[in-house]
Image 1 (cartoon, helix red, strand yellow):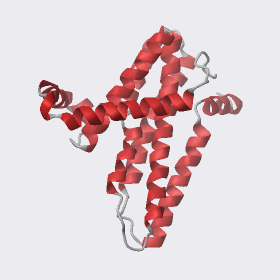
Image 2 (cartoon, rainbow, N blue to C red; image 1 turned 90 degrees about the vertical axis):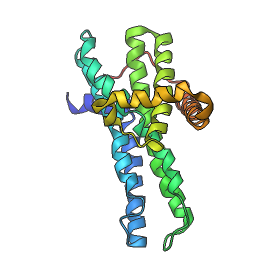
Image 3 (cartoon, rainbow, N blue to C red; image 1 turned 135 degrees about the vertical axis):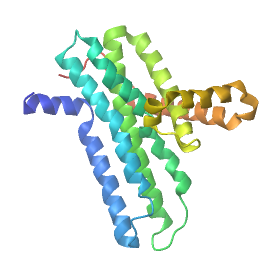
Image 4 (spheres, one colour; image 1 turned 180 degrees about the vertical axis):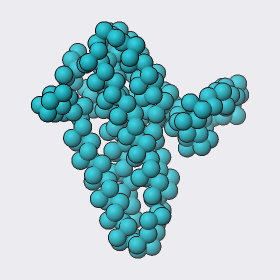
Length: 227
């Protein structure tokens, strides 16, 4: 893949604005360190942003494999599955606003801006990767199936965010001990009246992510994947 083709590919995947947003997030974070002389506060944002990049990178790999081997659709299965497993990590950063509070040495408005930039970048990573995966599903299965795929992916993401924030499960736990996570979820479905927060959180976050996705991709063409 020469530089021109690589540029076109990365451009089609929103790579440059994502890198810019990520750079701004780190600049703001290091600015807080210089201002407060502390590397402890909000350092979880750096780790969460790293995790948010993983589904985006898996979507790039899936798109690249499609371009190189269009007829060998099964080659897309593993990176596609890994994308789905790690996808909730991208919008998960929104929940880090739970850590927002007045702190010494740094004004509250700065921390609001810091969290907003990290959350925005996570959302941007989620939208870009989901857009790529929907394009691929559309190419193989058509528009209707691609939108069903979007709905399922966003619903699972809302569920994954809840499990990560309140149950403290990680994406790799789904690979290492999936039966424990399934048991956790099924127990809540078995007793919905005592798990109102579970259902309310999952549904509201799913609708929020859907509204955000529709806003950003409205008017875009899903028929073509840049080569």
